[in-house]
Length: 198
Image (cartoon, rainbow, N blue to C red; front, side, top):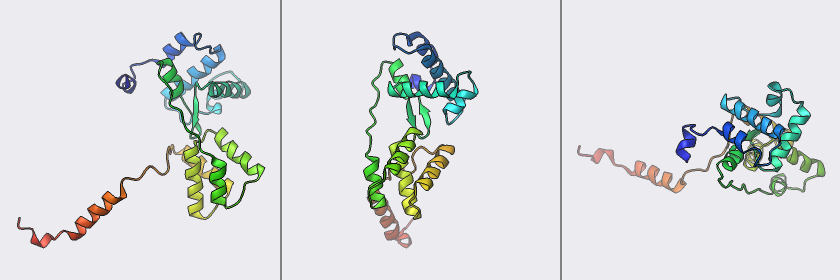
């Protein structure tokens, strides 16, 4: 199945049209999903409500309401400031969706700030989530701001906006085994090149 997906052999638009009624999607939800799939297909990134509004006659309010309903019903997901189609693709192929485990961002921010957060700051974290940034990206931006010594929500939001603009998915990817690197470095240091007979 992965091979078929990789080569683009599955037409999700046709599947969506054929299965929309059985999935209990409204015509407007189906239309918005088709628009999102089209934008994704032609390479427009990030896919946002304003991008969708540019190519359809629906108002921004209608698009927002439809997107909220699609996210609430787990047909699409918001990742890194853009819309993710994997949930609907999995549903169309009758595959199980991967559950994303949420992190308690409030406690992470409280640890980084060294104090409890105000109600306004909690709302700012919620707004970052509503903009579609993943928990990992928000935590990475917080780490970046801590390293820079500028621990403000405005700075964190600008970091996330910049990463979304340039398509950064994960700022700090898991590091390879450091012990392995140390062993290789030690072998290079200990190598006695002058003793090599060849």
